[in-house]
Image 1 (tube, helix red, strand yellow):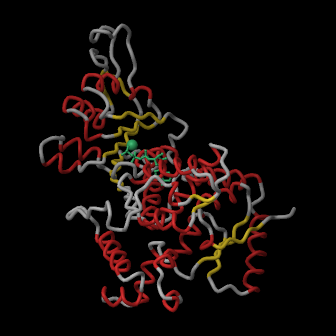
Image 2: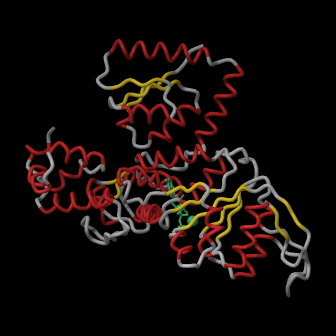
Amino acid sequence: MLQQVVVVDMAALVDARVWLAEARRRGLGIIAITEPDAASVGEAVTLGADLCLTKPIATEALAEAVARVSEKLVATHDAARYRSRAQEVLELGHFDQVVGTHPQMQQLLSQVAHVAPTRATVLIHGESGTGKELIAAAIHQNSKRSSGPFVRLNCAALAETVLESELFGHEKGAFTGAATQRDGRFAQADGGTLFLDEASEIPPGVQVKLLRFLQERAFERVGGNHTLRVDVRVVAATNRDLKQLVDEGRFRADLYYRLNVVRLNVPTLRARPSDILTLAQHFLNRFAKENERRVTGFSDAAKKLLTEYPWPGNVRELENAIEQAVVLTRQETIDVDALPLEPATPSQGLTLMIPGTTLAEIERYATLQTLQAVNGSVTRAAAILDISRRTLQYRLKEWGVSDRLAGYSAPSSEQQG
Ligand SMILES: Nc1ncnc2c1ncn2[C@@H]1O[C@H](COP(=O)(O)OP(=O)(O)OP(=O)(O)O)[C@@H](O)[C@H]1O
Ligand SMILES: [Mg+2]
């Protein structure tokens, strides 16, 4: 039987994760061509490459790699291995919805993969719109309870008594209007995961009951005294600093420690600028399909704007912007005027809160500001920043902004090397 092997240049793939998952789903053998550093190779292997070749590539090495991967495919073609491979693909497929190859995102996903199979309570921390709910869903889908329910509740949306009855259920006659006995979200989530969004907003009375559940796995319905036990894993999310709320006496310390068994931090979009265009293209593909529009990409100016914009509303804001752009544009390529954003310089709209900003963000901000002030001259910017040109170019590449330097009308001699 003919075994199909594909050779992919990782640097040329916009959405390597999705692409490789699809190739694996189809049972193709994958040879990845990567940069010759451990991180690039590690990433390709994590994403499911059967074999990695680092640049530069010799023809014989490539031929040999193809032969080896085909042999491996033949060997894995018996039924038992096929089943386990299908399972692997399934697990990999569960991350498909989470787009992002920035090291911070990769680190987060590897933490998710690590904690998902356990029963540990997880607290997800991150600014609004960063993807906390998506991460919570990924935890559920990659856990042993993935065939069970994933139940969500936004704790900020409900008044105290309503929230309590939503969570724990109520007995008939527990309060006016409680005409029948009703199960709450805990009972609904039995065998699965309960996602508590905006956990910082849980009022004190409900905090006590939640703490008891986390300690004893037991609770009573509102108005009842019959103790119920369910098998539920709790994942909570917040965009506020819970520890600070504890220090201010507004959140119970004991509950905080019970929720914070495993803590995951979802990075802001501006902290992982190299993901911006990948996400933008991902949303473009999705909305073009949904709206049956023939829109395929972004103009260089639009890419520049997307990369420089500080995205205070994070991925959700990007998602909304791309949806609008896809619907509004009359061209195949989205240009600046279709993007519902103010043309921003790196400084506009970005408030550097100190404390509150990472050194990496400050570095990026200072670098881009300087570069812009000298019309994109890498030599002059490097001199002002007192770093080597190489270092500056390396950083720009890391941030995914090297291409748009052209837009700064830098002298051509500066654009090479
Ligand atoms: N890494 C990602 N890849 C693909 N889509 C993403 C990613 N992160 C977020 N999204 C999308 O962005 C939107 C916002 O994500 P989500 O609702 O998970 O954020 P959130 O942190 O829970 O926001 P909030 O704090 O406002 O509740 C969703 O539509 C989600 O699918
Ligand atoms: Mg949310």
